[in-house]
Image (spheres, rainbow, N blue to C red):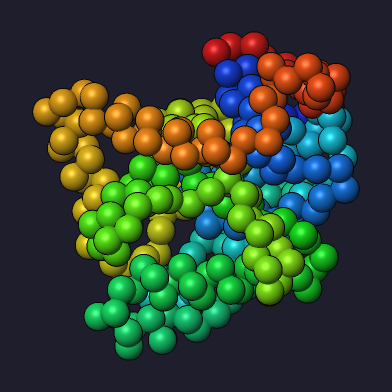
Length: 272
């Protein structure tokens, strides 16, 4: 009988594995006994995050619970529930699917930043589900490219600097929001689909390339074509800010070296 994915265990390239651990250690993202809920949209980023955390859970360095939830905002184009549920089942992660009619409200307010309303509804729904199901942390798949885009969006559209942090504590709910992919680039995440074995689910969002984020992404791409230092310079700004929030040096920390070794466990395939 051919062993299932669960029985074989999940594996990641060593470089990806180490990047994930680096973020978790440096910013204290996952601790013993945590229950982590991944916001799983069915896209490549959240699929990789879910797979990566399941792989990390299997290495046995820290014992933590893991689950996923998908929020259907009620767009006209239906979200492929079967595809997202099937992926979660294949890697052995409990999955919740929540249907809402939030788009009825978003549609009426489309002239008032639909992305902001969509994000608000999605976050609120996920946080409520996390509290009801006993999760103390919510994980989102924002990576370095997202951080750079958010930095420019804040500057251009809000007149302020800064971007999201790897760890954010929500005082009212007691939930902690974590972003373990902060050291990953979008290209690396896209390449990961090959070893994950998952085809991303098309986004049902009707606004598509019309969003502010899409415009900023296109702007960065255009500037980067003219000057290859544009993206590295923007990332340097993000990394300088991240350095202020490091609580442990991770692999270089003598105080936590033993714990780091335990977290690494056996990485399986060692390709970089």
